[in-house]
Image (cartoon, rainbow, N blue to C red):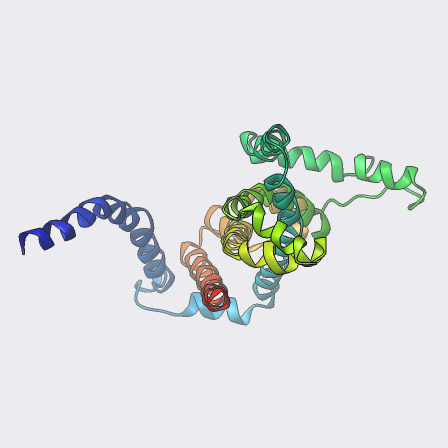
Length: 281
């Protein structure tokens, strides 16, 4: 009996600090935000109300902002997966020094402030920038173009910011896959792409799922890059929440937007986790 209690006590002692931190840093603020979203203005007595949620569903402007946010997040996530998996596969199968150089190139952007990187994209995407110059030099466009204040510009900048998270997560899964499995597949007559499709890709699904969920969560809550690249013409949910808090001082509506954003994210993420787990069984 004493041995059983000691076996339970050690895990409890290890997990308690993390649980306390999680309650203080996430659950308590989330509950506070939920309570703010259902409390009316002090001038009206501050009682229970759903007017903040009603404002969201009856205003087409905020519905459009929400749809744009989710559409861009899904595009960014899919793009990171399509680019990140081949890059991670190349890194995992490269010689030691080549892998080290590639990992350094992937990690290096994370050592720079996202604000500085975003301002760099403002120069590249703007009129007369690198992209405009390349397209004009190649004869694909007649005049200077600008990807500023466009959804394409937001996707390009956000993919560059979030791609390292996808690559490093997939790389961790691929490093646990021995190259002998791919060699055995090739010996059995499978081609290069068939080996990737039947061996490398299925075994890297845990990393792809984890990376894509991380990228989606970061992109849907991103504020700085979409706000600077998209501007006021293409607002996203995080920017709208910031505007309600700092501009309109409507904390209740900002809390309602935050709750809706969190709820909609969980609606997409939780089924994704169940499907991915069932697919691995």
